[in-house]
Structures are given as structure tokens and as C-alpha cells.
Image (cartoon, rainbow, N blue to C red):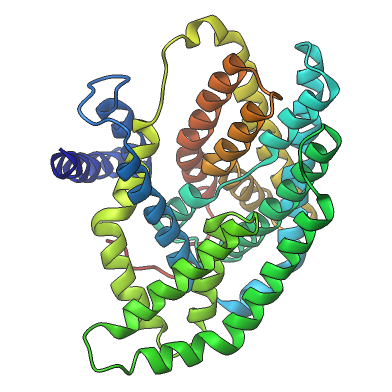
Length: 385
């Protein structure tokens, strides 16, 4: 059954992506929407399974790994100010907005702060594909977005640990922070010293495709230890890609990883987001869904765009950057699951937030298309599959 489902996903995602491009939108929008159509909410041709979820996770890890490979480390260093402004702007606005709306809907203080933190999360995995299609991934804007995503992930997770420690959760804040410091310190050191050595030695083995295998080993190890220390796996994969991007193996790894990723794993990732959508019973909470969706989109868009403007970007670029930060994706879903387990979210509110997260993910690519197309200079073209 899995084999048939994969065949359905691949043909449907490619056709839907092509149609989306013909209609003037990024292909990722079509892939997201076709997932909803294929899933149990509409046709029921494909159901969410543990195996499909694991293939999807590999897809998002490889997508962020490719983004790291395409990152110019010199430009990344220069984007520190912009990334910080965008990252913190995109946290503060949704955090405050979520807290205020939570209070209006009768949530407790801790529940309201938790809602604000959940809305502060960002997942740029969807935005990465849209940036690639808009030829913006290697631009100043793209670099600022990637840097801001790293900052957002770390700050939100640490703030979540801080909140959970006061809310009675079994969380040691010092341990949480220490694990993240250790991860980033180790990742930088290993990426600088060990990654080139490993590629050279392992890539020299007398068997086929050793370079690409060694690159994937590095990617998956970085992703695993990122997740193990409480940092999102996609951040670890991105750092692994950046580490390899400064070696002589960059072009070979990029070409082969892109082929592997876009032929199977990335289409599964995009489509599975829609497949996992559950719309039953949302009619009773439609008002709350609308309120939280508008809040989620506007606060992240305004906060990140304001931060970009303060760091020197023009208004079109700032709004483009802000729109790229709107998607909450898998990061917010993980936080929502934590809230449900710790009783900071009710089952109804959890289901509502899942829908909100899905909507923010779907609206991100067309928003980016609008803002980045407003007379902005295109970056150097990138090869797409």
C-alpha cells in the first residue's frame, strides 16, 4: 500500500506544482493543497502513516540541508544585524499578541503566554522552496531570513523551557540552555575542523558514491544531535549544509542531494502537510480560527518586516522577509503537542491551532510571491528540479 501511496503522491505533487506555476504561484503551494485533496479530509486516497511521516521528516531535513549548501558563509556573517532584528521582531509581536488574545478568551496567564510563544515560532522549510523558485535564496533577504530562523528557533525553545519551569513542568532551565550552547559550540567546531576531514577520508573509500554518502551522514548526525539537545532537526541539517558549503565537495554534494531530495523525499514532505490536515469539528470554533489566523499572520508579518526595515531593508524587501517568516510549520506543531501533553492547551484549542498552523503554511508562498515580485532585483538563478 505504501508503494501505491508514494506513486500517487509523486504524480499528484508534480502535476499540482506545475499547475501552480502556470497560475503564477510558487509550485510549493500546489503541492500543499494537493495533499489536502489526497488526504482523508477530501478524497481519502492517502492516509497519514508512521512510515510516511518518517519519509516526510527526511524530506524537510534534506530541504534545509540544501539551503545550507547554497548559503554563502561570508554573506551569512554580514547578515547578523538584520537576522537579529528580524528574528526578535518576529518573536515579540506574536508573543504579545497571543498573550493579549489568550486573556480575552479566558485563558490563564501561563496558557496565554504559551499561546504567544507558539505563535512566535517560525519554520522556514516552506519558505526555502519559495525563495528558491523566486531566485531569492542567495540574496541578502534570503540570508537574513535563514539567520533569523536560527535565532527564532533557539530563543523560542529557551523561552518555552523557561515558561514550563514556572508552570510546573519537569524542566531544568539551566540544563536546557546548556544543552543548546553545547550543541552550537560543538556544531561550529565539528563543522570547521571535522567535516572537511571526514569528507576527504570517507570520500576516498574504494566504493561507489562515497562523497554523497558521507555528506548525508554528516547531515543526519547534525540533525539528530540538534533534536537531541532541543534544537529543531532542521537547524542541525542547515548547519551541516553550511559546513559542507565551504569545502571543495560543495558542488558534487549539492547536485546529487538535490536529485535525491526532489525526486522523492521533498514532494512527500510538502504533500504530507496537507494529508495530515484534520478538519472535522472545526465549524464550532470557526470564529477562534479566524481570529488566531489573522493574528498569526499579521503579527509575524509586521514584526519581522519592522525588524528588517530597522536593519536597513526597503519596504518591499522588508515585507518579503516578513512574509517568509509567517509559516509556523512543524516547529509550532511540536510546541502545540507539548502544550497538549502539559495541559496548557485543551483538545479543542489544540485542534484549532493545528488548523491555524496549516493555514499560515499555505498562505506563505503566495504572500512571498506578491512582495518579492514588486520590482525587486532577482538574485542569481539557481538550478531547480
